[in-house]
Length: 487
Image: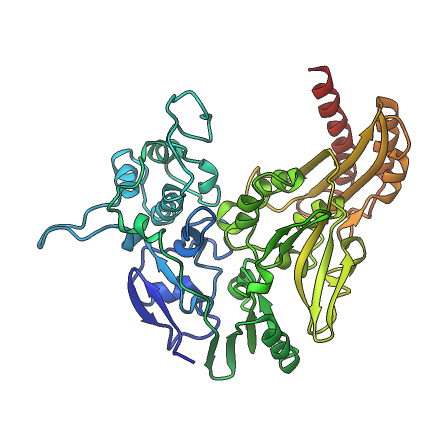
């Protein structure tokens, strides 16, 4: 295999002698690119964000912002990244570089004070600047609100970037002031070419290895040979373990670029979502076709995290407070497990067996998630957390109801944060099905919902609060549906 290397700001840079666990952040800083900063080391501040060339949705390539503190540098073998230093262009000999339009607007509008977070903001802003379907509105009053500018800029692109100094208004002003990329902008032109193809990687240093195979079959064989390997996709969970808990693995196996795990198909009776597609890719490819997922995505961490995180990873960790399991339980989804003996499909409601445990056997991978069609018409996702964005939920509740002629025909309710695993609220579903969708039915079912699971006290919420929020979520759903009918 060719020696591992990354194209950084247009220059091929060898990965050696970095250790296999070295993050992109440390890899860059060790090479003098110190604009990339470490703030939190767990993907919550965005000071480390960089741009990565990824397969596009509307063009061959999208410039995607990711948290460099979480991604192993070896995971970007053969790929192409741009840092805050790489956005500016060289000026005339003897003169200073010419600022990128995003950098220029941040400077003239006072979007930087201490400057520590600024390079990360600039990279996240540049990713939105180059989003192919971003366009200015002819009428500045159309399509604009506190979070969307007349230039089509979506402030959610910055939801993973924190700043302690500016109060954000100057940063927002800069975001809403940027125009469209010029025709001769090299990064805009780069979108018209395909991104670097995935490469097989065997990066070994001492007793540690970072490995990537080209096919699912080869990967499954590798997992048979390396039963103790850590499997990673977006590394949004494993990266935290490496940084905060100093965990190291003898072998890490990457599955994020496997083509068999990156398909999205809409069939007559189901939607199949590849386990290694990022949440952003799923969101943009589905484009609202599954409303409950569309409601989930803006509440799942931040755009920076969603640009790397995958459904397969969120399910594979088995966390009881993951945001996607309640939604997928309400959608009656199943997981497709691929292993040395072939594939099998398991209902998600029977997938989790205990705290961070599942029916997944050694050597198996989650290949895809299947959502049956047709979809229930009444859906909602309620995430109760201390922050609106980029936070872990105290309680998560997802609803999918079929209400016909005022009668609840079917009800599926997924819960997170109230038991050792994500669960279905079976007793509440039974209390609703076959009953009229009335205040009396809902109040009785809400009392049942408050008793579902085994909520605990911790630093995020008390058990009593969690139980109360379960009941309130159903009352909130009922209020929303009746308001829709009355209006």
